[in-house]
Length: 230
Image (cartoon, rainbow, N blue to C red):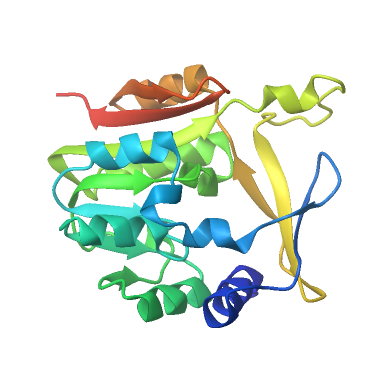
């Protein structure tokens, strides 16, 4: 596995700094990515994240946990929380940081336990890549949710990226391609989806969920809860 993401997380944990991390994309020039955002403390999280953590209940699965920032906060608050992360390097970092329960796998390959809350922060649902894969995830999530369980996630409408230019692809404009570059090594290109709330609600309804928007940051980003229709 080409794990450039895990490489810079391990460097930051070991040294408290990294070489420049570049995040290439398919809509503009590459941008520098600050590694410290993956290691933020409770006083550094956003208002949206703080609100989301207050909505967590019961047994929690933190999907796409990264370096464990959110997992560690929940763990310190006494939650039975498990971090799920596909990057081996990130999983190693979390273990060294004291995360107690870590699953290093793809979410689609996991269905061993059920949870009260599936948590996806920092647009974690973006791992689905495409609109139809969101449907696939929501159907898979039914195997992971307890009867009264919930999915908490944030996302945003990125139409503003194309205010001054035409979107020229055939797909959904929120499906964006990225590539990490670190110390001269480039990772594989990957797609990350940002889904507008009206589209997400349509998908959720189609898959048998009710969607409730819990928080709006006033800048196109929102936090939502999905629960299975009774």
